[in-house]
Image (cartoon, rainbow, N blue to C red; front, side, top):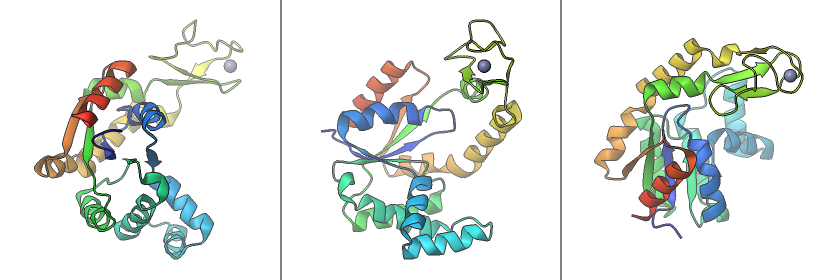
Length: 218
Ligand SMILES: [Zn+2]
């Protein structure tokens, strides 16, 4: 078992948090917790929290931090989190982090480590804008990791490859700006608590994974 097992993965979009979560979950029986999944589950189960969240979302508003933090607290008390968990995409702000610290301490499952996924900005931009889609068969390619055999042409049907507007440079820059403004203050917050562990997430997957496991067993 890992020495540090109750985890937060912190990093900008494109940093590869999902890529390294998967093998770690499989090897260490960690639960993967994303707030999107929890919200959907609470709403589907018709819990009090789910009902409050749905009423707010139906009005087109953001679910308040307190409700999200309560949902996360309820989630980490579940049995499948006994061997540890990875929080991915939460907390996003210092206010959420403070609520999480309170609720996770109450249930005896405090955060052991916050892994910071460090990737140079130009690599993030490359990754976020690398997806290509086939106009005809909708197959997806990646300019870096899964290049088509012929540039701009689908391997499967010969159709033309294009970039979705979600994957444009402007969208990528906006997503990174939101991260810088809202989420990067968490780096200071967790550094002061002494539980921030940076890894070089620009490395190839196997080296990145080795670095991650090294940090969690230190
Ligand atoms: Zn195609």
